[in-house]
Length: 285
Ligand code: PRP
Ligand code: ZN
Image (cartoon, rainbow, N blue to C red):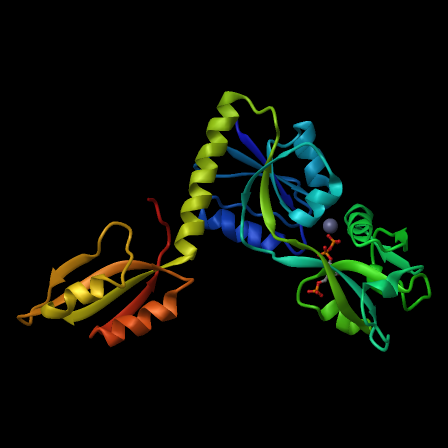
């Protein structure tokens, strides 16, 4: 049977988030120990473990059908692939940083300076848009030590927690690009692969929706129900069940993470009691 070939990072910042997301989709994979390929149970999928920087190329060339990669790597690689979904994890930014004691006021500081980076394409676009004339030094790794060894005046690198910058005596001064993990696909998939990709995306979306929503259960006197419904969006309308005590009901609904606390406050104001909030595992709507 034909399988959807998915390329993921073999180790590094995206690895854990990717494997967790796949597990939540019912796709258990285990990499590590230099393993290059793994099959998935109960779904026609084969997982390839690669260096993240190589994933766009492999997907473009059809060695893999789809891939999970950071937008930073994707845009820098500049390959012909389709972006299917933003995946909402592994958020980071590509930033300019300078030695901590630098008297930095604004971007103009970089005029005539040397900047070390592994992201020459993204950086030169940013510098051009901001009309800054700086020299880019492309290096492939350990960018954070470039200023310390006198190779550059500043660096442009990925920042996630900021601890790498801190440890190297650098301070972040400008954001060049914001990134998160995305699902990409080859542009000329066969109908069969497209069908598998759609099944995979269906699972991804069910997991994504579930993680941004909560299930809420509460008790309320019947005469307050209309009021309470007015603050509950729900998927269709809330479920209402009678309680054993006469005149009271239990109300069940789904609320989004975004306005979560606000909705809870309003529910309390409107007389809701015994409010329970429960995580949702999958959401198919
Ligand atoms: C980036 C960057 C830093 C680190 C920053 O590497 O080069 O080393 O992450 O993270 P922090 O702010 O949490 O300290 P990346 O994970 O992209 O590694 P790679 O270039 O080897 O893929
Ligand atoms: Zn990398």
